[in-house]
Structure formats: C-alpha cells, structure tokens
Image (cartoon, rainbow, N blue to C red):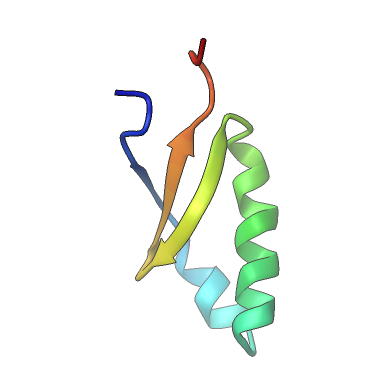
Length: 57
C-alpha cells in the first residue's frame, strides 16, 4: 500500500523556460523541494510521478 504512485502537477513555466531535458530535470528537482516527503519516480507529461516517503515503517 505504501508504493501507491502519487502524481504532482508540474507548472507550465518549467517546460516553457527549459531549453533541454537537463534543464527540465533541474527545474523539476528544484520545484519538488516544496514536497519534501516525495521521491520522484519519473516525469510523465505534465506530472511528476512520485512515491510518498512519510508514514513508512
């Protein structure tokens, strides 16, 4: 039950501002600092697919 993926909608400015995939990665990682209990699994479209880290035993 702990491995249920959670989707976080990424803001459009990340994709508009980034010039390449490396910059998208950097901007997504920087944005996701707002969600300290989430670990990014992948970016799919406009969403960061994450695993929640809190509540684990």
